Amino acid sequence: MKAKIVLLPGDGIGPEIVTQATRVLETVAKKHGHEFAFESYQIGGIAIDTCGDPLPQETIDACRASDAILLGAVGGPKWDDPSAKTRPEAGLLKIRKELGLFANLRPIRLFDQLVDASPLRREIIEGTDILFFRELTGGIYFGESGRTGSGTTEAAFQSMVYSVGEVERIVRLAAKAAQGRDNRLTSVDKANVLEPSRLWRQVAARVMADEFPDVQYDVVLVDAMAMHLINRPRDFDVVVTGNMFGDILTDEASMLPGSLGMLPSASLGESGPGLYEPIHGSAPDIAGKDIANPLATILAAAMLLRHSLDLDAEAESVESAVASVLEDGLRTSDIARGAASIGTEAMGSAVVARLSN
Image (cartoon, rainbow, N blue to C red; front, side, top):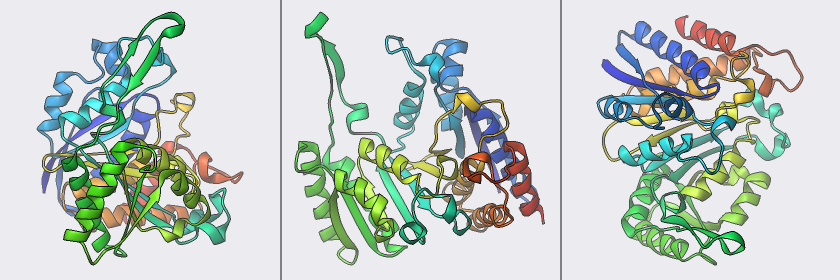
């Protein structure tokens, strides 16, 4: 296979972790006879510093012409001024919209080797395997916003809006995924308070009843779901929810395996390239120190192989390599829990070595 992969290293630890994931993809290509061409472009804070735009047009054009996109992270204190004309995160929101990436897949898989790295008890989390579907291009993050008044009367607003079509397509995608897993789907909303959630619940119920009657379906309020993730995470298989709720819940769920540094994500549309990234941020406090955990980004590269290039066997080989290095006791500092740890490059090298065998 020949594939063009766009790299968006971004800010903070982004360049370090993308470098290691790229090494893994290069190893996969060499071993299996594929040809992957890599091109790097700017996004986020570094793009603001370079050209004043968190998502330059050349980045958009390159992404559209690619087969897949691998992203590091964006943002940092340097660009956190609330009065700034633009922010790094605007680039992230824009690329999702520009490429129609409406579905964010976030697997919360607990590696057996890391059960004791979790802050929760083994008997609560062991066996956890949840696949979140977060709607990514609608909701409050993309709603009309602004400010009114001045002084003590100044007020800010941001609208949460969802259409029937937006709910239908993400629920259908989640339901199809459930059919290929344990055939259970949970929809999360706040229908007791929010009108958009009431629409979400009505549409989701109709889609499930009409198109997926075989799938075991239930509904949970977002505040209850936040509790259930901590006290009974094994009860869930596939979870579908809106943009903001999905953002918050998956960050909470990242603590089940013990670190944000272990969780990848895929952002997909109805056509065109998918975008793959770790769910963590840019961690500027550890940038350049060779201590960031690259495994989430490496696992995101595995998702890239599976979802954009249809290379399931190669994806499984990457995931198996990650499991192997963990089985051997190799840990970065975020998952070491006081034990000896290795650095970013060493962890990447360990995964490459397992793949090369």
